[in-house]
Image (cartoon, rainbow over all chains, first blue to last red; front, side, top):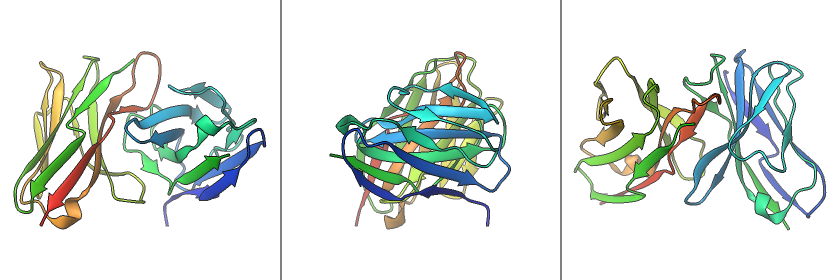
Length: 114
Length: 113
């Protein structure tokens, strides 16, 4: 089944404790992206990647890191999480390099930073 | 980069009535306009999209219209049903050197029985 997966789905952590949210797609998509969703603010892009080893900042990249060592995986890293990073996170992928095409979303990861 | 404004933020309609959600965008070069539906606790999923070479596209009870001159596009849902209750997001290409999509802030559509 063609899909985007994320893990974990739910995470409670404390300020400053490094964490990684994994994202994987099995559709051989070129483009992958991370969004955060907050009430009243919609979906805001954190980072995106157009290909292996090619990543770039989105609208809200502060406090986040990403890597794209393999085409199928695009982990999101919070080196020192803070309470303002409490949010719902979505990974997405798209067939074309530009990403301005249908994006397929993962199931989401709900993060609470205490 | 692109700026996408979406209105209204909340829309309540009687079951069977029509619903219209509107979005404006800022980059006249944008050429792809998708709409996503997000049910409670679920992921956003594409329901319809339109490209700038057409003015309207329909798929059963949903339609999208595009006015490139005015830089706005709208989602129309006719004969609304309870399962249409969800948050709807419009989007446009980010442009301005960035890639991907810029999303509107979303519209919470409530279908009243």
